[in-house]
Image 1: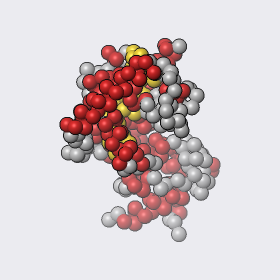
Image 2: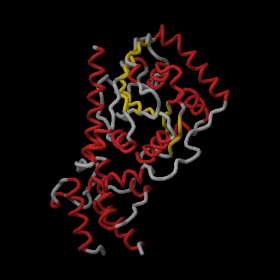
Image 3: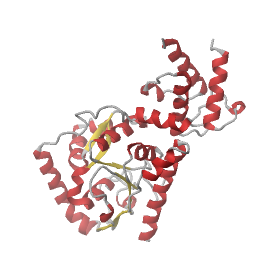
Image 4: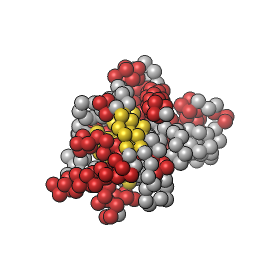
Length: 83
Length: 244
């Protein structure tokens, strides 16, 4: 079960970066093909996550991230591994 | 200050803070260089008579590498036209190719001979490709890029991918806009033998990165990358219009 506070924070952060209101972001919708997020904005999201949570997102993980839920799952996974 | 975060994140993805790998440039044997000179000698006659090729603005090339050649894309012969136009300076130019072509011995042979090709690991994710290009630039060479990503089917420029802006701004290397006319008519997708048709290869003045690097300190890095990409597109469009 995802941490609700974390989900809220990530949603707010993604919304701020991609400039789409939080209530318009369906967590299962593809950010790139459905919401028009380009690859550079995708990197902006990870740069912002990197700063906020001090997580090092492995390069090979980037290509598997498509939805907000993917982002949340990845952050949770990386946070659980961080010391 | 999200702009600084993005810039440093990109530097990490491009591996700009790591030492340059010693094997970044494929080492060419003398016979491969000889074959390359034979290849370009062989295309000399077709590019004079079969597809008569005019070259404009070659003096706009920076005196020495590193620089990025950002060329419009109409067909598989684009790189050959540009490298042929650059004459001896083609030796400083490297291109990137996916494993699809590089791992096939027949195509690898030709793309290495003709295009100084460097293998990249993936066909889908752009960051390894940009990182490979960044290492070539850091090694003091030039990189050939098609910012549209795909070939035009009708001569109209396609949307430019902003990765070229990231690469130029983060490495600080000038972007040389190049317009190649009508190769889409000569060798469209699926055609093996070229049709006879004139070609023009037009080199524009380099887009220098210093003003953009300064600007990146004040505004979002994302906007600066986009702006560089837009400026490049404008310059290539201007080269196209100047040929009409």
